[in-house]
Image (cartoon, rainbow, N blue to C red; front, side):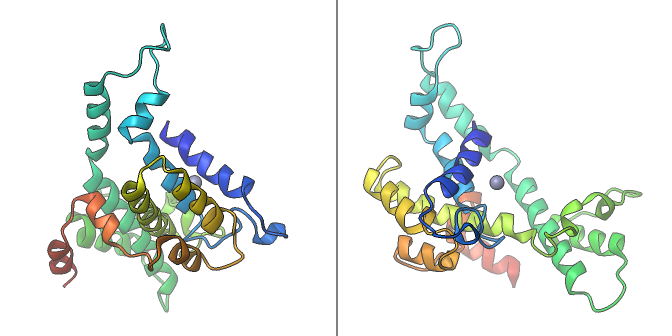
Length: 221
Ligand SMILES: [Zn+2]
């Protein structure tokens, strides 16, 4: 369901465009913004009312998901978030370190150091993660952070919906008109600032991961 909603977010970005040129429309946006509509849409799957409205027993579609099962399905999402997001951060940093190095790089060493710094443990001895990390080159170069950064943007958008109501049609239309329809006619941060009424910030990601602001500050100090 999450993947279906994710890809629907990309589809909506293309379908709702009002841009006059393909190069300015839909998903033809910055790499660190392109996953924003898709990751925004994922959040609807985890809204109890939306989840119930989508559900149906395979033998009887009118029988919807029991509230306790829905609650547990939503709660299970938090499982392994720390590992998942620290890995994303390590990949993003590793990618950035290779692409900002001034000379030859021992990629295995850099990856190992990044693992220790971010995940608190070295990579498995004898493994060569950089050899299979295809995002390092081929057009995405130094852009892996975009997944995580788009998530920051997405959670800013979701914050507004959570405040207004996840199925609020006025907010939905504003998201369509202010963000989705605009494609690359303006920078993503401008579109988001128009929609949010303020510049996007990292707080919604911290809240999503259960990190308090004081923890985050002491970890980066
Ligand atoms: Zn995507």
